[in-house]
Amino acid sequence: MISDRDWQDAQLLWDYQQMHHEPRPCSVAIGLGSHDLGVADMTVDLYRRGMAPLIVFTGATSRTTCDRMPRGEAEHYRDRAVELGVPENVILVEPKARNTGENIRLSRALLEKRRVSVSSVLLVSKPYEERRAYATARKIWPEVEWVSASTSMSLPEYIDSIGDDRLVIDMLVGAHQRLMVYPQHGFMIEQAIPDNATAAFKRLCCGGFTSRLVPEAGGPR
Image (cartoon, rainbow, N blue to C red; front, side):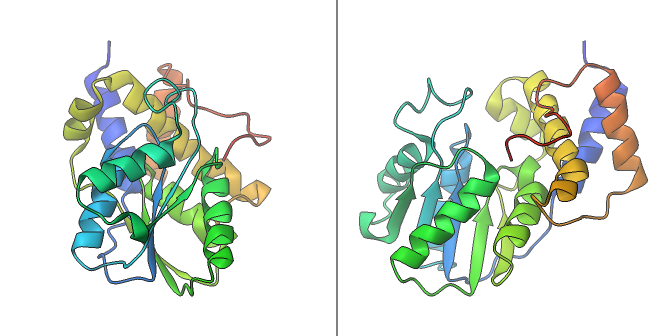
C-alpha cells in the first residue's frame, strides 16, 4: 500500500530530478536507452523541431528490457524513430552500453570515430533521470555543453504510461541515491541536494522502496 506521504515524497524526488533546461539547437541528440520508448519519441520530436541534425541512440539490454527489447534498447529506439519518419542516415546506434556512464563514454567514442564535431548535446532521458544523466555526462565529457530533455509529463501521467506505480517510485529512489553517492566515486559531478529531497529519500527507503538501490561502494552507473 502506497501512502499519501509516500506519494508526496515521490513527487519531491520527481521535481528535483527535473533540470528545466530550454531545448535549443545542438550538435547532436543522444537518446539514453531504457525500458521507456518515450525517450525515442522525445528525441524524434527534438529532431523534427530542428534541435539536432544527428541522433545517437545508445543502450544494450538490461533485466527490465531483455524481454521487450531483445535486440537491444538502441536498436529498438532506432526502429521507433524510423517508424516515425526519421531518415536512417541521421541515426547512429551505440549497442553496447549497459549503464549511464557507458552511454556517454561509448557515444562519445562513436561520434569521434565518425569525425562528428560536437560542441553541444541534447541529452534525452526518462523524466525522473534528467539530473542523474546530466551529472554523469558533465563528469565524463566536460568539454561540451549539455542540455537536458525528457518528455513533458507529470508523475501520475508517467506512472500511468508505465503501469507500475511501485516500480516507478523504486526507480526514483534509485536515481536519487546515485546523485548522493556516485560523486564520491568519480562517476558524476556533485549536485546540491535540498534537505527536503534527502528527507523524502530516507522516508521512502524506510518504506521499502529499495529495489533499485546499489551498494554505496559503487556499482552500475
